[in-house]
Image (cartoon, rainbow, N blue to C red; front, side):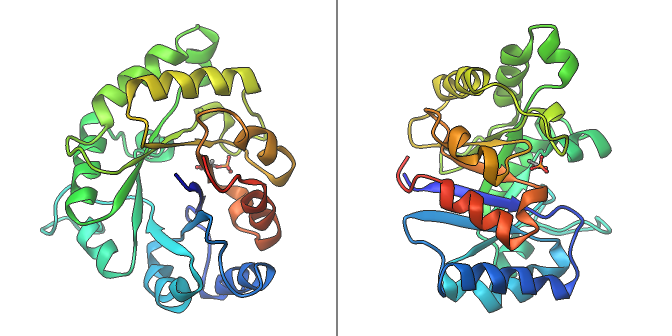
Length: 242
Ligand code: PEP
């Protein structure tokens, strides 16, 4: 499998942010490395413009969420079909910020993941424990329950992102042993051909160590994906074959 380095821009970026992608392309001398997958999930407002301008350079683009239905009376929502039509290849579902801010349940995340697959997108299904759950020794059980409830029904290619909630945007990361333990646990609960990403305060300084852990098949990167220099450092640290 190729590793997957995915950037989640969250609610950041106006059209001028295309300069960061151009800078990234320049750093890679004109095209994304072909031995690993590089994905950027910008705000939906930028998706179509980015996908049409930069897909030829080997970068892939994705959404940050989708509705479980293909169309209908859901003001403000975006369907997986719409993301695919805009040029997306992936969509993040069940990010902890969606689970917390929009009270998304495992069942809703599963429905979104299935909708993504039906639309021809690869869903990136996010799971991860809170600090309280880790301190209570429940991290493995919490993640197992999230996987049981959130993974798509459809037996096709999807991606899992293990993102401990307490590591997102905080500068904190689990120990390498804790990452290895969780990724082995997730691997045991899924197939060998499913990529399992680590996410939570990945930056150029820690990327190589984290991406070398067994069963870590790439990274989901928030803050450090917004700047070409940092994202380039992380992509460059990824092994091509995982
Ligand atoms: C994320 O939100 O998916 C994430 C991993 O954020 P950060 O890298 O900023 O911790």
